Length: 141
Image 1 (tube, rainbow, N blue to C red):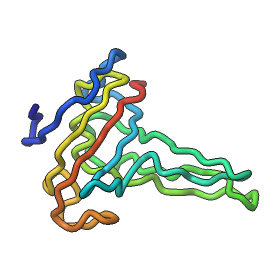
Image 2 (image 1 turned 90 degrees about the horizontal axis):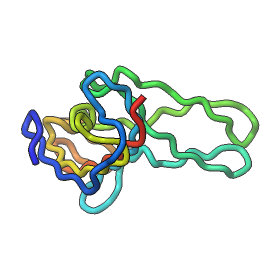
Image 3 (image 1 turned 60 degrees about the horizontal axis):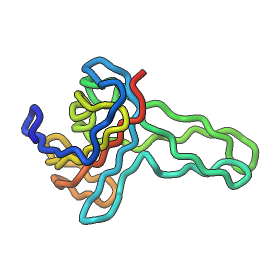
């Protein structure tokens, strides 16, 4: 299928829950896959005290300009102190492609540099790199 801005995607699984509409606040897990390797992911675990690990979903507003919600999560670390850790940065395509998804849905998107990371590199994704974005819609608030 094709969305606005020429973004190509296909649904792996149709969700049965509430629909994500423009302006909705949503929680998703996303994985950026470059040459078969997951290189940016909201599923990256953060180590907490007592060898506990968590993977926090990414929260944003559908259709909003990317990057407005960059917040740092406060977590307790092994020495008992609290620290803030930045969430992984998703590509701009994520803010557009979730519109119309239903909770429980999974979608794969072909992300071009124009709606990806552009001229910047991100982990193993080179400047002007094309990659796949896998999105799972967890909740519409």
